Length: 270
Ligand SMILES: [Zn+2]
Image 1: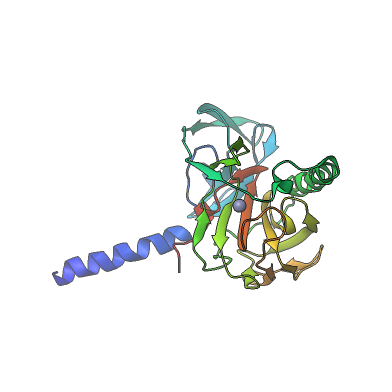
Image 2: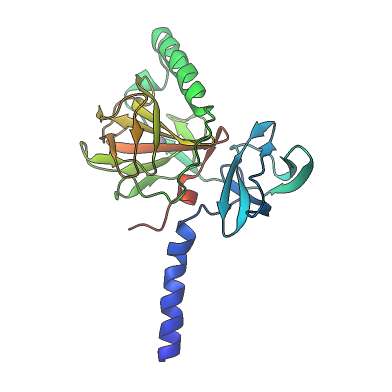
């Protein structure tokens, strides 16, 4: 390889690292659309999509809207309202996620009894409220990996438990040994902790402006509600509490209350 080509290869090898410092756009269901709003020399604009305020961040001299697109959203043209006086187009592309079939021996979490079902419904109320949090804090967007374990189940899988269709997998699973620390991918405020029927011991972090992380199945929670945490702080330990076939981290990332693929916010694997 010539010196020039080696130099080019070196520069190209750095590009994914730079790209990782800001979320990647993928305007599909379960993805994130990034829409330029205005030059960052102007005052911060506001933007809404589907009647909800969306995250606005400055990057490379521009104000950008980062919009979470919920799984199940039909492909097609949509509009984003800017400052209540103009509109931008948001073109959502289709995406087909793969299927996964899981056999669970313990039927308790497949066909819960009425008491467990009642508990699961109460859990959902609390979780839904936490995921709808909209604070003014400017979120940290250069995420880090919460753990270096292998990915065991990708975001968006169409799941079947014991052949019964279930909601698509709305998070990312990382296989990790029981008891390993789970690091906060970005700073934020702990807005809810709990021990839930399906999700087990769970921590919700508000990163700001509608960007919320939910980490599930912990063996031990190390933070408490109201606590401010920094990127890399240990939130809890890996476990398999709730509906889990083995110790792993389930991480759901929510943006304007749409569950989105956490990989879009992460740098390449360390
Ligand atoms: Zn999961």
